Length: 604
Image 1 (cartoon, rainbow, N blue to C red):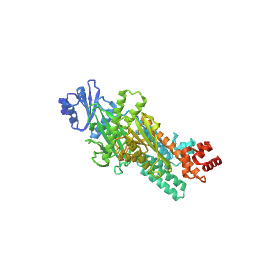
Image 2: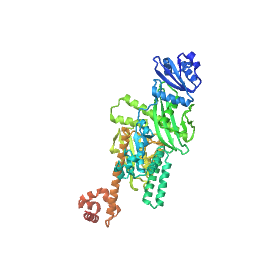
Image 3: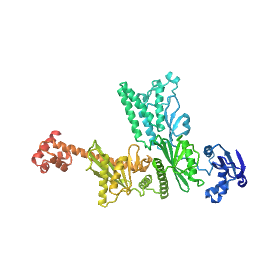
Image 4: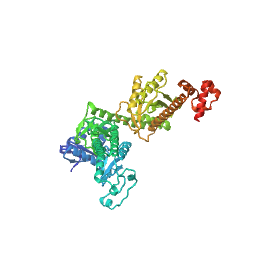
């Protein structure tokens, strides 16, 4: 450790041309800044010899310096590691602090005999076992844990299952054993090697590698089939299909991009905004976007270098490639790529899109706080505008849903919300005209086209937001209809998928997840549920009418035209029963009225 009584004109020439870290002290001897350098002499001298060209915040730092210390290290990477540790420990006031105010959860695979899976927000729990995470999307983490329950028989009890305790019969079987979620290792009913085989599969899946688990279930299925244990083979087949279904819902990037860390950064005068995407085995397994407050108007490359180091440490990433939107002249133990074209460029665009959304959300939050909006209805609509990055407050929302059972009597429903409340007199239902059979995408395309063609023809107001109940397929079909009407890009449109309440935008490969407690998501869900209810009610009515017509057609002398005429006039069977004989005769004639009356009397 070298220490200098500070006089930069005489002392800077004495500094070494070596990598290392430096600490600045104020007049009270308090550390006010810690930095790292590839070349200590060049980096420290830049603060003083370029003082006139420095920004306001850097000048504040420099005039506060009364002393410095430096430490020489072997490499720039060692300097980065030491700088990161010292900033966390000393928390100097001029350093940016890469600290998120959220405490995200992890999944821990414990290192005990017969390991367990536990959720934890305590990073110190890494002493208990192997940690995976953090999981910014908590719902996705729970979906992962639910999948493990479906696939494996991993114990949930907190028993200490040492060989001595198991042999001594210290524990008894619990309900989890009796309902098939555990195979009873507490009483020695499950072989430890078999149990650890399943734990190995869990480790692979948590790392983002599905292939070993798929191969494991495939082998088990084939082995059971060869032994004519067909029920067991079918069980393994179901688990294999469950795993494949889970994989199909993951966002696949490109198998050639095996493991990589993607970083997109943009900044303004006061802060930098960074989005991180973790790529494992060609699939996005983690995402996080956050803000880094600037202390000295630090350049983007300096901020990003610190962020990359911190995030890769936090996520325990060993990826050999870092994909970023700016170049970094630094040693981060990985190759840094700044792509210009191709799939890697698309990943950067995705990261920067998330940054854009994050910045807009921050701006909207501040606008809401300044506006002091107290009306709950307006607050929800402003929040929805913010969450979906809309240009206008969505006071007029229209939501579409399809309904059919095995392709019979298909109908579609459109519900309309004004100022966050349903406007039931403006609801509409549609019976597909051009689509035959259970074609959900074709039906959605047709009804969206019909709805907005009519609004254009009648010169009615268009909605501020269209919500489609369904995922990418239904959304794409709706977009086709809007393009045909030259409305695409003029009306915001989103799809909401039921599985994890994901929100899809056209042409985006990744969905966005709105906080499940958010009032804006609840408004979208309410519109979706109302469209579903309205569609189901209409579907049931159509089915009951179809049943009534077919029943009446079974009466001798009553054909389909007469049955349809009866239904059109009386609407329901009960109304026909309640009608007088004179009314029936007036509508149907004497003979047909008698036949229907006799039929209804016999069926009572």
